[in-house]
Amino acid sequence: MRRLDSIDRNILYELQQDGRITNVELARRVGISAPPCLRRVRSLEEAGFIKGYRALLDESLLGCEVTAFAMVHLSSQAESDLQAFEAFVSRVPIVRECWMLSGEIDFVLKCVAPSLGRFQAFVTELTGAPNVRNVKTSLTLRNAKNAPTVPDELLRPVAGAQPREDGA
Image (cartoon, rainbow, N blue to C red; front, side, top):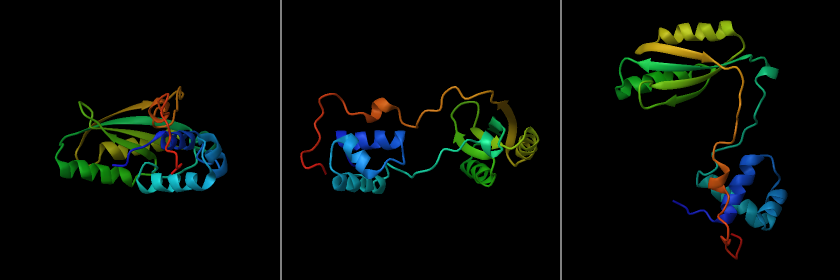
């Protein structure tokens, strides 16, 4: 696995804050020139540290009024049953995230729907899916925090860390 230096970490920090930043501005912020900055970004992409780029959309402005979570308990945790459930939810557009958990609940699903009726129809479909024992749902009231995935302190280099002199 590739080791990240302070410049790499700063690049990841800046891109996580603003994925549309220009390479020139990114290079300025991390303290290197534009060509090595671009090489580093491409290297971080190729190494898998950067999985992709996407726009963060406002669901409510686009007609999705309901955000809800569904906690799913399966009747079997055999690998084939887990995979079958994952395949089922991957085909459902209103399921935006699906996390397998340890403990009492097997999966938590983040769902975004245009209406409560559409979400209820999905819950009916979900409870009737093979191997689903029970489903508990919670409607969201508001989002109190929506931070980037990786905490800033894991990306910002430690004080006194020195970048490589070649800027590569």
